[in-house]
Length: 361
Image 1 (cartoon, rainbow, N blue to C red):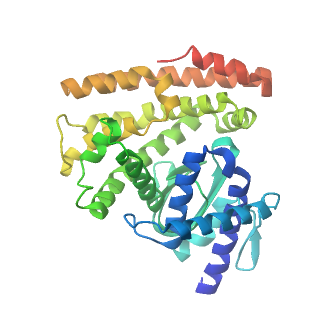
Image 2 (cartoon, rainbow, N blue to C red):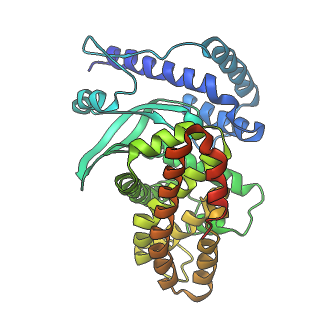
């Protein structure tokens, strides 16, 4: 694929990203929206992480972007043209078969509130890992406002190193406002961000991309246990209800109890202050807890209690035991949710909410 063809393809993917953002930009609170837009500007302009953003330029760009979104809110997604053939933008498997030989990777899918996500990037690694095909992207040519660092579609796992680095940077910037003593701060304290920003960010990205892969393997296993068709049909009917957030939290906990927590727990060491070789997985455990959404913390209070106990004693055994209990608990709860949806359809949202409210672990 020559430069002109890549530019045309990038433009089409970015156009679809703009349409998705036009329809879902209002999903965020004003504070989160402005923070995301600042970092979106940084990505588009290819500015260094530590660079001070020019206030007037950001303001002008923000106004122009919102005007573009107003024009595209009702537009249809465009097909992607490759070698003279048009492809549906959600046909990621076929598109990747065509793009992989050119060192490119593409992904599409639905996130929270059924928001479409698209990205096109540089493919740096592609291999089979068990039953899954794993694609790792580096630099990204096209993306939307929200850039999930990892996503599973069927048996394909997509990991986005640049998106992950930028997500870590955003969390670091937010934490630095008040520097609270919390799990996220303890994770950052394991790296030398104050004097070595780029090196520390690269090191943290290396570790967390491995853990993102663990979670996505867990997502695949959860899909095998629950049935992706039934689960996705339920999610679509729960869109924009509190039950959707609950359902996503339940499945995330199931995925992590299946794979992520056993692996991190097996390697975590107590009393780690700075990252060095094998010690890094204690930093990963801090980050794992610090990165949990409020919903995930709310429905799994024993996870936070076990983490606090590990910090006091250095004993990782209770965390491993909790992961085993969690596998059974979250799988049963997820299956009960699917059952409620099978019986009540789109009317299941309040029943699912009540079920999860009484199903904390």
